[in-house]
Length: 112
Image (cartoon, rainbow, N blue to C red; front, side):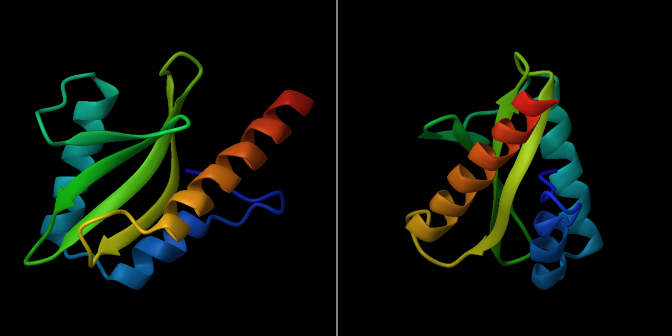
């Protein structure tokens, strides 16, 4: 998951805010495993452009999205933003947040 320059993990805070149930957490783990193994099902993942991908998680009567990027030839799945979906389209602010976090992460990686 993305961490800030000072080591904070905003994705964990975003997930905590959503108060995922045990079932929803298990579904998210399963989805992430399928992505990691390149065995996604139709509808699991959608490209939002600019290197940002969206995992679609159907929860217990609610829908969540995890925006992420595949880095290092797909060896690293970098979680960038997590939220409960409340509208048809991905909110532009969420995509912008993911883009900014990805730029920040890549910038810091190039310095190492």
